[in-house]
Length: 268
Length: 268
Image (cartoon, rainbow over the protein chains, first blue to last red):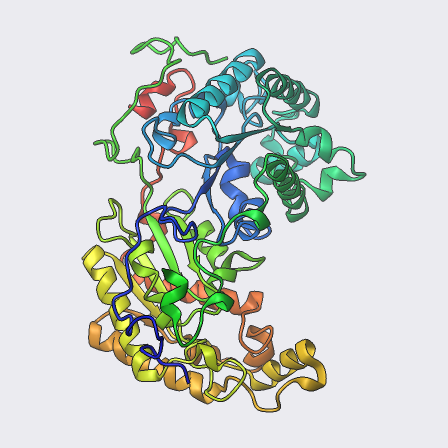
């Protein structure tokens, strides 16, 4: 049996030492870095079963906290009202990385059911630019990842509308894949101009045969398989930006490093 | 089409107003409350597919952040070294609620493979008490929930050991269900003495026929079904303590409350 007090260096540690945040040891930082997921419903729902946010939490387990800041129904115009709250300029610990995943609502068509959410594509690009610049002002080392809106399966949207409104469902889709693609293009263009990484999920998903039903549950939101694609792309993008989970320190010692008869040592 | 600037009250909001944290509106607080999950590997793994941490994140989506502080292999003795870091006494926003889920490692038997992790049951109870008292010192309104160690399926543990060590696996189990039950009893007793809620997951899981394979993947860690039991019990306990997700405010307005032609109003 291992008992406290048997450690030659110190006595029993009923009152463990308090280290400062960011102490020299490196492994005992008070504040674990954060990865923030900023976006619309596709981000808000990312902790549902099979969700890409939950999967990312697991990928960065004990390395970083994954924080969802997803707001269903929001477009980039409304997102601008949130950025100073979610990403305060005087925040003591700005996120290590942030994903920006808007556009699905901005691309809703004028004159259709969801026109309230529509934002013209040039404004969408400009709003994204404002968000990115704000994040750069928060921290010049933050990894900022843009994600385009996903593709739209118009048939899936129509079926979804009928399930909600029956015969009253409008015949014309409130979103089209073509229009989502236009927004995706502007997003990719902005990322190139600002020299930041971008995941063109609109394009990526359409590389797979049957993406419409495989990746989208209602023509717009993600199935577990669709979530897995986003997760894979985000992990790869973060890795390319230097955030490899396996190279990041544990926030406290791995249990195998703790000497049962002298646990204090591992925490000094 | 709805354009910014068409709002009668204000002009286009290219620079959205910055509200103070906790502004009178109530819905625009800078800091979303946190639910912290403190424990061992069963907490660390709670964001794996089907995990109870991820499910809790989804339950409290846009209401509270669920933060995993799970440390695989840790017992309560080693957990004491972490509490001042994870729960600083001068923390500006202590968690709204914390679950404390230790004991599976404390209950590892002396003289067996995992004896390094063993903590005598009276010390286990005392360590839990120290953790609870520390949390009370952090915040006298924090909801503190104790969770007992889960039951142990000795056959499952043996199979797991054989899968790791083959013929070299020890014949005697490193954990027994009986001993886990002793630790569970002490945990329940402490909760009663300290007047805080406790989830006796050791007992709860054994109410279901076939719990050994249904709820445990390797005789100790949880299957998705086991995770679902923990999730259900935690949600129910938090609800009974007044933290009903549906009564908690959204951190920002629901999109349906935003007037497309005058979005500023919703954010004032």
